[in-house]
Length: 197
Image (cartoon, rainbow, N blue to C red):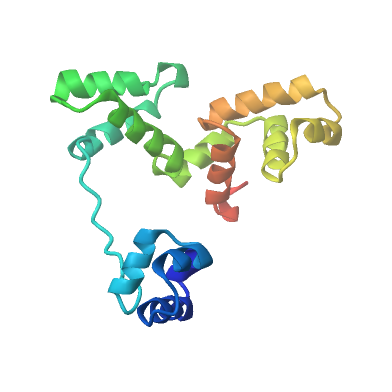
């Protein structure tokens, strides 16, 4: 029963009943559905012990974070087919900067950096510049996409084929340098209404 650690009344009740001999340890474990080690904690502490959260250990990749950020920022200037993969970033760290950690750690950092923090690379000026490169039809598709419409819904709304919508979406992603729809929407939300002309 997980409530034992959050409900002080149950903690006190179990402790009282076992220490007074009203209930055996085995019966207490069975009745309150707790592990015998949990019962041991209850009997040795008058109230639930607090758990101290340990500081996370520094990662071996931490000293190389600025290098990874520089690589990823420079990748924003080139076509997405020419950008570094996580493996290539690992190889550059190893060969050029003396990184001795494993590839998995470097990959995990790249994935976290790329997916969890997409806006680190996108300034409002970059986003506005991307928006100005869109044609009128691509802008219409983007607006409907941001409002939550699917490709089918956009095609119905604009009176064009679904394949045409998919083509427009692909070009919008390329021009805006977006990884996916979620990234595209986050970029559009980040731009103030006054910048959207």
